[in-house]
Image (tube, rainbow, N blue to C red; front, side, top):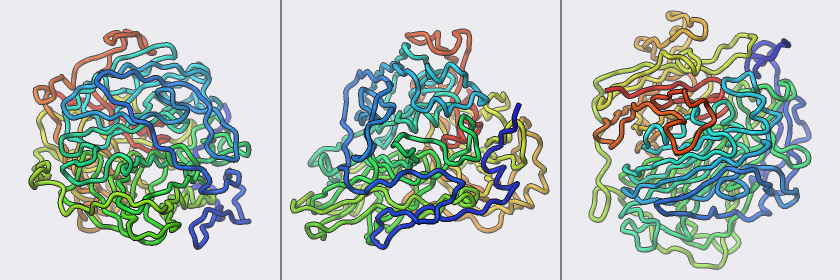
Length: 587
């Protein structure tokens, strides 16, 4: 067997120094430098702001059918349509599903995939991936943020083969919020989502109706716009590419890469004509790798009104906010003062992690442009409050007091190794049986210790949580006192005595209900999470399930029994290899 190294391990070994691959002009228009690193692949030049920003179509109802299929999609005006994946007949991404709190949804999901657009990039050394997946890729639909029975959660081991179907039951017995759905197939999630298998899911209630005249006075319908943000690399002929460097051979896992082209709702650097008034943008980082510091090119303020699981108590005025993969944010933007023809871009200035920068990767700078036209838009103003008042939902409750403190760890082996280095939670692989088993009805504090220098967004299925805060970690001292064993042995030493400073609470705009949290490099991030009981849920979250228990046979053998949920890093390359673990909520 030939040696195959991960990108990060190789960087540490040979100390490559990168050069800048792209620049941003004073008007924040994407341009390219003549000095481009030979260690990374580069997208061909694409003229920005020539394609209109698409609005995803909306579907609703209590019984829906959705399929995953191969299509062809045109990402940019100057390039032909290329192979892509889409849900529900859409050529790329999927429709926005809109549901109401308390009204259950039965979703019939069918896998109609054929040869994968990224078939040559599948790494069959990764857990669960076989050669057959290139021509017949499995798919598992996960409602991210949904409080769902275990058999309907889109467990990665419950992926179904092409030609097969499964019925999911989504109770929608949770707070109104901004959910999304995406593929979750074992070992190829990054490829399926990158190729297009993702869509938004809005859960409405009597306050946040999404309609004109809603009790909260929020912009609605035409003035509420989903923004599905991604970054990509394209080949010279306009095809999607998950490869970032020739150092790693095709078909080998890289560990993630910064894209050099911004994609919004499936279009490269699109533009949107806006009326002069207030807009509501439902933004999601649906990228595979980067954390973005998002703001507007003119420095204008916006008002953050919500997180993943609903509204904040009051809007938070800010000029920027960080968003990691999997996180969602609800923002009001006021174009009232714009003159016809005025333009502003949604931009990012967060630099890539050190290891990526060493190759020459740089921040993907721009996502889209908004251009004011002659129309007069929504004339309402930013509300003073969103919760706790008349005709408003109740205020956010205070943080619960935990009765259990649980330490979990985020790490990566740094040495050159064969097989390649992997990403890891608790120093374990996915198939480990040494899993977390919180008790139903218990409030826990999870201390998530990140000894890597990079940020990792951690997502827990089934539950929602609140962020308590983040504290710097004396990483070297912590590791010296608690030497990390070989992969496969659980390693979760408490960080007590190794903090490098006081805990800092969450940013005001991330203080609401969450299901994904950014764990900065060299920190301990603390979250407060309550694990609900079967009686509260109306279903047993610890019930055994298998493909044989569903309406149709699945991709995996019927004898395989599955129990519980998963928690993982939402950098999808990390999730695939192997930063994902099972967990159970026991009685």
